[in-house]
Length: 400
Ligand code: FAD
Image (cartoon, rainbow, N blue to C red; front, side, top):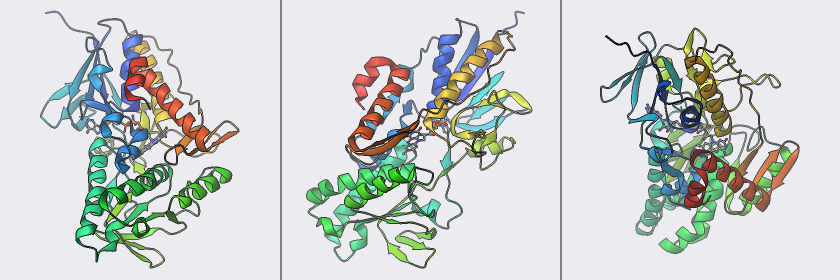
């Protein structure tokens, strides 16, 4: 009987890290050098870095998703639309919810993160999230529903109050977008704009913790002028269906509560028996799990310490993409029995946060960007990513 010795590479998640691994493997490997399978919950890849736009309703969710099969070469990569339910690291097999079993020789985990609520009671049950196409569709429709409801129940002004938990990257980008949408919603639903309140609550002493002070001041000024009220240095103590209670005892009634408090690693990794810290795996220099060198981790689930700061690199799309590139390179070497693997080295290129239409802040090296320049930079970064995964035609189709 003829044995099939072709290595089976299985990639979990078609997000920034997983998709880039698959795309780069298509370039690195020759036909039949390995059998590559990409598994993802949905038939589409979504541009997470833009989810705040459909979440607030200033853009449509179709603008931030792309069918995976239009990005990969299906002759080279098998695509399975399925939800991973379990990873059996001893038997080297992945189980899907529909009962399918997918064996592997090499596994790449790129399942992305889950919302972190820091144990705040009620947060997981009552707060909306900005994490997926499904979660932002629900949020956008709820916002519109609150406006339409207010006109029928005007003794409930809290329907027009928004509480956003967290003033980090996601929280800031969302309030910028939401503030832009409010005037249009008020017009559409015949609501007095003065009745609408947006509170962004942050436990740290400042918004956008870790950002340069000049950029933080600029962001605060822009967003406050758009009608956002920041409450800093004040954690949320409890969340209810109709509002929040803060650590200082203040109660805020609200029709919409959104949690952007942070992220933790995917629960499936811990459930598989791998050692994790807040759900993330401390990977080796090649992004492998120590003791399980056939398993690579990319993106939000990979924990890497920045030697300069002594702290973990924050989970970003930028690092996920670079990790995908390195993992693909090393997998190609491994299937060729080349042991000269390349260590992962992160090249931080800077960062830009949107503050709504035509506004933003960012930095690259020592250079800081404000306002329309930062907004343009954000568009260029988005266009570059789209170009990397789908070429010019995708850039033209999505027009970031
Ligand atoms: P993801 O991109 O999250 O992909 C994970 C994939 O796995 C998804 O396709 C998901 O559907 C799939 N999946 C999950 N569970 C299963 C399962 N059980 N079975 C099958 N498939 C599954 N980063 C930046 O660098 N710049 C930014 O400007 C920026 N802005 C952001 C704005 C927002 C609103 C948010 C939420 C994040 C932002 N980030 C930004 C962070 C960035 O999006 C993440 O760090 C990045 O998406 C991580 O990539 P990943 O490959 O680990 O996972």
